[in-house]
Image (cartoon, rainbow, N blue to C red; front, side):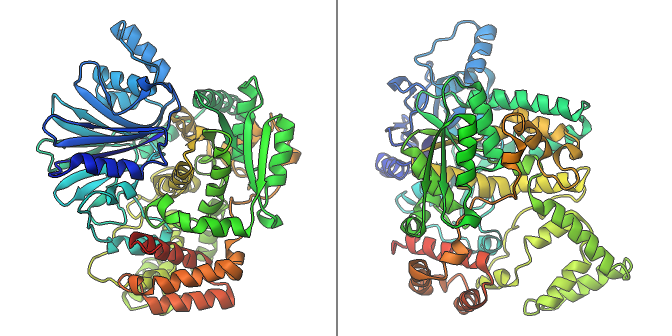
Length: 633
């Protein structure tokens, strides 16, 4: 795990600027840092290292191939690196290696197979930049699902890229304005969807994509090498034919293999253990293949509604892990709040960022790598909203069934033509009349906040898509499958994976997610829907596998999200003082972007009636980031 950066066609002081970028990446790579400058000074690549595999100088970056043709800066882990090395040995004969790092194996694979073929062979999480001195091309690539970040774009006349958008801001002459077209989407989702960023001219490379920049390095092109939509559709065309027990057996083997690969490290390793299904399953399988007690970590809260630490402790005792827990409270969150803008780099407002940062901080005091149970909900139908959306659609269609098509849709469109932003009833009625599928309802639910639409003051540009607008209804067979895929295309990479990566890297902790193993993902899409959700039971196959290791009675409890009681704490004491201070201090700055009068109304309604709890957090995270961006925090 590391941080990478680069500048192309920078006219003055390239070394000083790459060093400035590297400094901003120090938390991602505290162990070492260096840069590489090409002969004509047009390209400079930077790297900060968090040493995980091959801790010697042989694993240092930027790394050149032995023939000097390629230079790479790379962030991540290739879990099947040694298998890839053996394949090359069998195909091409003896190859020379200076060390044992996956970076060098990746570089050799690219030299022998080319970039695109190598990407198809790699199993892991990564973002890298490769300069080909022979073809004079710079290639950027990102892993299949977007575990590792990569920002890129133009600063004046130069092309820049980095793992952290803060590193791009460090480039001399950076003056890219805030992209007001992304704000409406941000205030709807709580995050900025790829490929956009908070700044004009700076983008996120989408998961599973390759960007190529050719000399004279003024234009670039992007193309996909992996598309989860194709994996999903092919999976449904090639359904698993075995029984549910056989499916559990197959998943057991695939996950154990993925976890064994991801336990590869030359530094201390452990796992998050929240007490929920997914993290407990990952830890159970880790312990089943480990000769020593696995290190596990959890945080707890005094508020019973939010506390799973007691369940995690019970599970850890049953499995025999070496468990560490820490109870955190109000003051811990207060102390953490000013760190959020630096950690996330741009506005980000999933409030579970708080416990994720807290558990990452505690975990890093003991280990350097931690496995996580994320992505189980998206691949194995874990969200209650999947059921709720279908139930809601049936109720809506039942109540409005007396209005026949095409009159129903026509009437809904006519209502929406009028200015209904000030009339919640008409807006909801108009949109409801136009909804016919679960996918349409999913989009409507995630875009039904009238005040979020009215917050943005800029009318100069048309807002970018907020996500999933182009998803074709009925692309897959089954409503749950379509809803899961929609989450995988946006919510998983842009929210969940971004949260885990930024929270961990702020404390120089590498996080790994076994459920995102390519073979596990592919197998999950072949499973019949009833193996995932059946008679109201979510994540059925994951639970059946887990019960082989942990008694069902220990896990039979309502699902809890990983969160802190922000909605309670925000109304009182120091956290309320912090919130009101942020709103007041950012008032003049935010006036250029959001309706300050509406913000005050939202805050008052929140305090008096507990409305807008999500939206007020989105506003606070934007305002605090704005203060940070302007050097006032």
